[in-house]
Image (cartoon, one colour):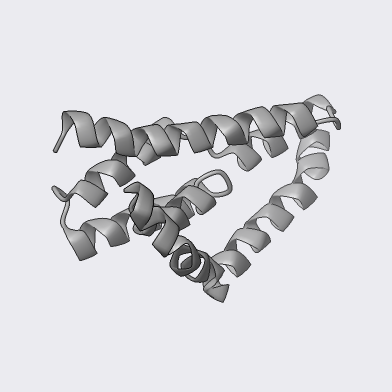
Length: 135
């Protein structure tokens, strides 16, 4: 019970932040802002919202994934890339929040940087892998 009381405020804040982020339209605005650069390097700009939300919320990223399936079809290049992103990235902030809070660890700077770098690498490599293996 002590652990639940210790973790609950962090979890409530995380869930509130995810809800606000999804409802504000900020993810779509960022996707549109990076679209020209993404298109020049061959990265689907439609993956940007998923890439931004996946480290924070698995359910939010799943909702975006389902939207991609509905809008572009499950066999499209974008859907294949999104599926690989969903399977190869982690809900970083959730994992760090839960496990580090339970263990009483407060210095998360290096872990967070490394985990977000791994998520970014997985997102980029998902597009490369799908391009090479599943055209």
